[in-house]
Structures are given as C-alpha cells and as structure tokens.
Image 1 (cartoon, rainbow, N blue to C red):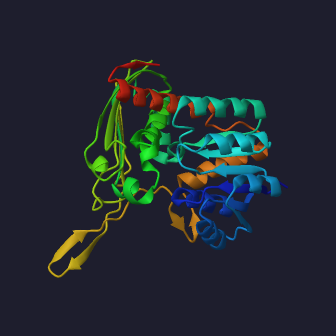
Image 2 (cartoon, one colour):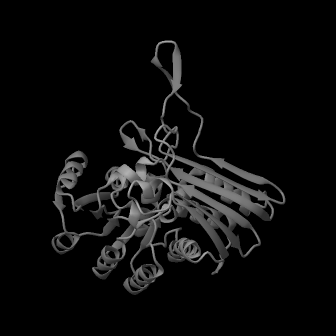
Image 3 (cartoon, rainbow, N blue to C red):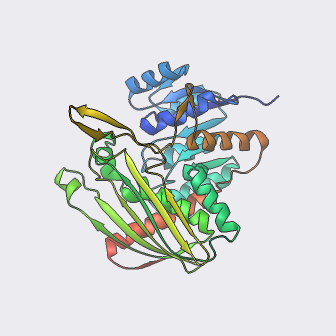
Length: 345
C-alpha cells in the first residue's frame, strides 16, 4: 500500500489556497502544518481545510514537524531562502512559479536541488491544461510543421496588482503572468530562446504608487527560427469578463494552433436592471473548478503528478532545466527593458 505523504505549506495567500485544496483531497497526501506571516490567515485556512497546526515562521515548522514535502507559495521574489532551507532539511519541494526574479537566486535554488537529491518541481500548471497538452501533441505529430511565428497574450485585471498583491511592485507582469506563456510556448515548440527584445509602458500603476510596468511586450526568437511575441499587462479594467485574459496562437508551415482560455464555452447573462441585460463579469477560465466539493483542473493535476513522482521515485515531467529556462528568458526580458537593447541568451 502506498504511503500518505506529509506536507508542510509555506504561504496561504490566494493561490496558496488553491494548492492547499489540491493536496487535501489527494488520497496520498495530507497537509500537517501551514506557515504564513499572517497568523489570522493561517488560522482561517487551517480551520477551513482541517490542517492540524499553524506557524508564522517556516523554520519553526521544519524543526517541529516530520514532513515529506514542503509546498512553497510565497511571493515571486521570496523563494530562494525557504526553498533552499527545505532542501537542506532533506525534503521534496513543490514551488510556485517563477523559480525566482533574478538569476542569482535561480542558480542558488538549482544548486540546492542538485545537492539535495530530492524531488523538485516548479508549478508551471499550463502544461496540465488540455488545450496546451493537445497543442504539444499536435506539434510532436508534425501537424503544425515548422513554427514560423506566434503570439502569446496573458493579462490580468488591475485589481491584481492594486488590491490582491501587496507586493506587486516587487514583481512585474513578466514574472507574475507572462512566464506562464513563456514556459508553455517553450514546451510546445521544444526549442530554446536565443534572443530577446522588449518594451514596456508606465502610465496607470505608477500614478497609483506602484512602481511596476503596466504592460510588457517581448519579442523572443527561438533556436528553431520561430519568433514569438509575448504580450502581458495587468491593468485590464475591473469590469473585464473575468480576472484574466489568455490567448496563444502558433503559426506553422503545416497548421496553426489557436488557444483561447478566456472564453471556454460559457457566458452568463443576467438582468442588472429592468429593460437591459448586462454581461456577467464571470471568469470562464477553468483553472481550478470545483465539482461536488472537490478541486479539479490543472492545479489538482500538477500537484497530483508531483505526488505520484515521489511515490514512484521518478523524475517530474517538469524538470529542473524546465524550471530554470523560463526564468532565464524572463530575466533577459527584464534586462532588455533596462537597457533598451537586444539581449542574447
């Protein structure tokens, strides 16, 4: 009989809760302890998901708990210390994207993974969405031919950097959202980036006291000759149909892959006042839907894959190199923004 893995959770924010739900319903894992700097938030999540113990210091959790896995869902820029510490304690680590927001931290995490010999996976969960998987299979089957060019957009509503994230000025659209498409496109193409050129705009968020770009556009050339324009902003109006907007198109010599995650077949209309109907601002991006009180979707599949890899002692499909390369590309984009120059990788 397979054992049930004991999990420690670091970070209980909005995304952390999605991951918590995925662990708690998996028959082969159980969260034993939860750490968050906000004790009230930690207690709230512990009560909701029946987690026995809470901490405000992950080091205390590591000293007191007997764990198999630690899942890290701290802010983008705050990954290096908890990840390296957990690996030094001999624990498997499941890390939310990105690995880091600079290559120094990214390389330090990579070295810690290699030294530890433990399982490590970055949660690039787009790979577990059927549309992206099918595009990958089509590419491998030769149905798209050689990719000529592509366009990959992922945007967030302005409420994300202004209300949901206290730390948005310590990240950017590159690391918070664009990196999802960077990973997905790199994976589908089976190619590595060789050149980057990027532009950015500062208008709305800077006026609201957030020193982070409104939008970033990055032209990335891959070693197979394809050029893909990555486009991300996080200033969509609050009235947009859902929290985010995502679209990917890859044009090949034999076919084109077209993925639209913004509208996946459901739109709801309801009367807001007599004599008119208004589109409900309801997301149709089925990232982590609930069915009969159970989490389903790409997050559940991503967490489940990592658990299976530990129990079966096999390497995750998302390798350490897969974790590093999107961060390298994202850092090159950030460098191009700083210098105004083309950056070679």
